[in-house]
Image (cartoon, rainbow, N blue to C red; front, top):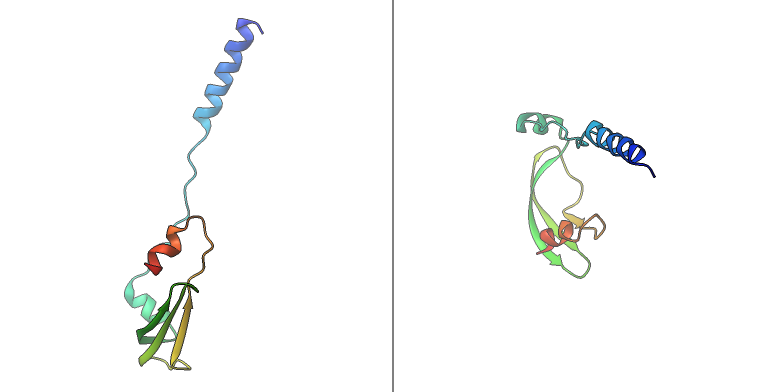
Length: 94
């Protein structure tokens, strides 16, 4: 390749890299607590009953309803192992 072609290629690559803008992540606007309470159908007080680290399962017991009526007294929260990095579920199950 000639020097002229290499120079044109270098200028083209430089212009292309400068023109690329960084990707911005989509972050939804955080809601105020009042709006969350207003939009929620059920709000309740729960207590952790048990944690199964092999199944990544947290079991809660309903203490009382604050807003609405939640069916049942036991809530099972399955912490999945999927995701981009193990720390996503390991931090919760620690």
